[in-house]
Image (cartoon, rainbow, N blue to C red; front, side):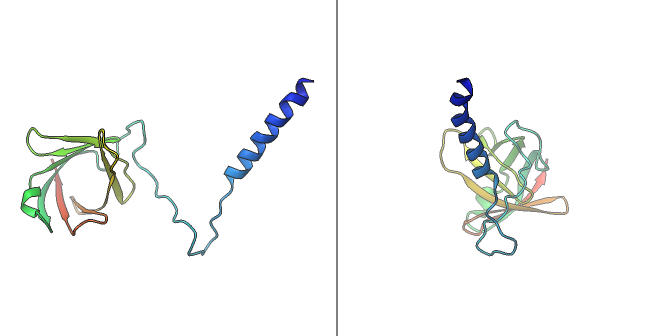
Length: 138
């Protein structure tokens, strides 16, 4: 009798795992979703290659002079930025070429592209207004 009661549950579990385990992406299919980039910062806050404090030394685009001197502080899955005593704390997810910022208590998430030019971290906001920040590690 116990076997009959557990069979429907086992069948449902098997169907669920089979349905979730497949991949719809076909090689060379332009409509297939882009593969996710490896997330280098996970939820437990492990360090990334951006770990530490980065100061904007040169800025391009709108309000360039206003952004000069702003410091971005990466600590695992946390990111805070600001000048002087003002810090805007939040969370981040870092990949090999992007990072995000979501301020604590806010639903909005901002996405950035980045790359390195020697020791300089070059950051631009995705869907932004052409701002580019050149940051040096402190």
